[in-house]
Length: 324
View 1 (cartoon, rainbow, N blue to C red):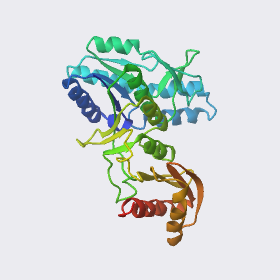
View 2 (cartoon, helix red, strand yellow; view 1 turned 90 degrees about the vertical axis):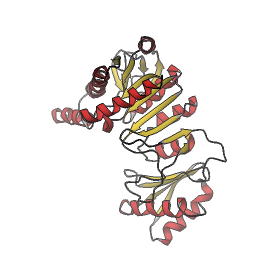
View 3 (spheres, one colour; view 1 turned 135 degrees about the vertical axis):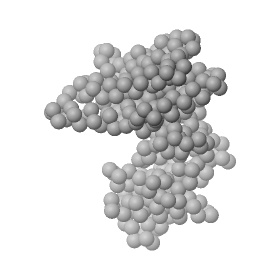
């Protein structure tokens, strides 16, 4: 079986973390999987590169910014291949264009239009781990493009679908998907599984655990995703299409700092839930206004200073109460 493993920047921030990620790849190889690894840029290297360019000029061409920012993932891919080779695992690194990721020409927020992963198939057939630089591709004009923030998730899912992988694992610095961000809401619970629709709603509403495009693509392809920790051996969260009986009434709450909204997602989230949300917030003297109320997701605008209070209140009253 082909397995795609994606490692985020926090999982590759230094050599020790890189070695730990490589050990997870080695473990998958021992289970007789053919492994494709997709990597993000290490740590904050992409932000550092962008800041360097902006110090030169705030009007840098997006084409050149793409060419610059794509180098972070290429460094990670080469270092991962070197690390795997040092552990006795044959490996070969590929830039996005070498992996056959073809996009449109929308620099900075390109969309994948075609995948031709022939070189990856060749590497797997030769017994190698294929290590791919995520977040990037090549335009019809032959220029390097980037997929936008979190684009390495999309790279991983797209490659998994194109290669016919049986599973796609996303490794990060959290244990899985929670009912809310556990760094903000102490009572947040780890979810063993979540439906694609609920995960997509949370991603679009501000959750930064998975890129919305990656969830949408996995749902379209019915490709099972797993969100796992690269630091601890935990079960993680399975993201798939759940039967109505397995899908909870409400799956989670999230926030969008920039838009100053708090959102509730789940199969029972919708216009009928809106009065209850407004009532709960009014009882706590938190003014709110409906922004969106559609099947699967309800979003409310709240003053930025009350956003965290609103998030915690709705989580505890809706997801931790007996009648959630």
